Length: 137
Image 1 (cartoon, rainbow, N blue to C red):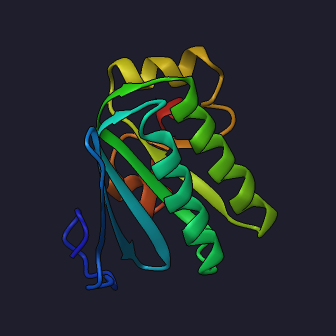
Image 2: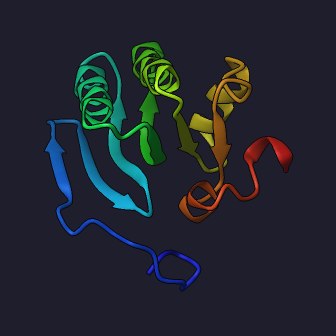
């Protein structure tokens, strides 16, 4: 079931990519790959995120959601990994949607102008269903 109670097709083979300062939980919702990040997305962990997003593209998954609601720190190298993932997905007609709640991460996306680059949603459910975007609020 997705967050609003309706049934969605979910991949039961979720993947975990642990890193000392970041964990990535990957699963499918409908036809989208969801990357739930927890921890810091920085110079030490961005190569792991970049590799996970690239790996999804290599498996022909070009509709990606990156959930940043549990990320407590994001630096320029982390932003670079997200932008690289977006560029790769767009090459194949896909996209990367971001989930970010009000706070430091969303402020950073606003300041850097990335709300114009990414579709950013306040909840995972909104991202899956292309609902209310952060820029629309």
